[in-house]
Amino acid sequence: MTRAWISLGSNIEPEENLRAALALLEARFGPLVVSPVYRTAAEGFEGDDFLNLVVGIDTGEPLHAVRGALRAIEEARGRVRGSEKFSSRTLDLDLLTWNELVDPALGLPRDEILEYAFVLGPLADVAPDERHPVAGRTYSELWRAFPRKGRMERVEL
Image (cartoon, rainbow, N blue to C red; front, side, top):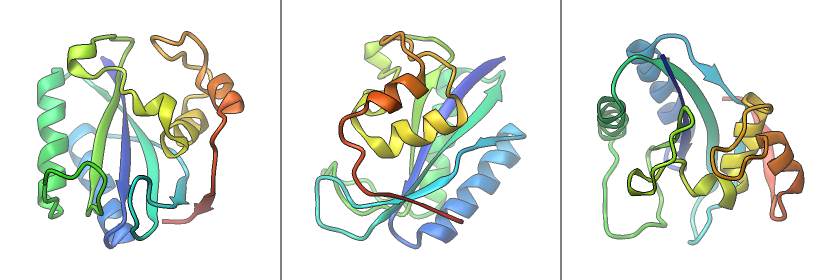
């Protein structure tokens, strides 16, 4: 069984899109480990605030099938992919880790874990004692030392 951590974010009808994403993830993968939800400012562009959280799944499916499922869920919620990396989104699902796999070509672990508070904070909430596969420190240690926490308001979904 593989433990995978997935970040979820939305700033277009975020409550509705994130609730739907959680239901679709649970239907596909079974019980989820779900972090608290945080409201954060848009990063890299002017836009509505995002709601962000992290979800853990345990799966026997291969990596490519999980990535395909995440993309299908995004598309089912109206995700439109464009050339702009930083833009408003109905739903963004990013595979953060795949057990302890380190594979830069696959983007694992995902760089955003160490770059953005809205990824690392929720991950530290649900997996405080797990170690980042490259940094070697626990997510709670990384979060305590994180220099750019910014505004993160815990909210109910």
